Image 1 (cartoon, rainbow, N blue to C red):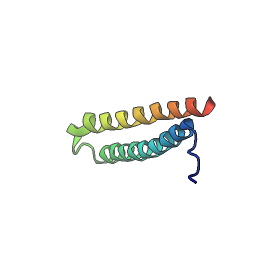
Image 2 (cartoon, rainbow, N blue to C red):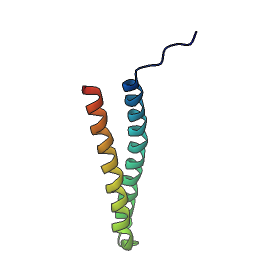
Image 3 (cartoon, rainbow, N blue to C red):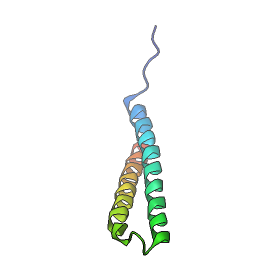
Length: 75
């Protein structure tokens, strides 16, 4: 006989945790890319907006998933 599946909410929380880990890695890499660019200035100054936008978007996505995870675990 098959084991019962965990509740849907538990699956959602695990999916959110996995997504948060992925986004955290992406945000950390974006932060390091921005840091590396700043150390090399004025070389590649043209990329400031591009690299900063990637870092902003990565952190915004991470914060959104963290909010969802907090809401899912507080319920």
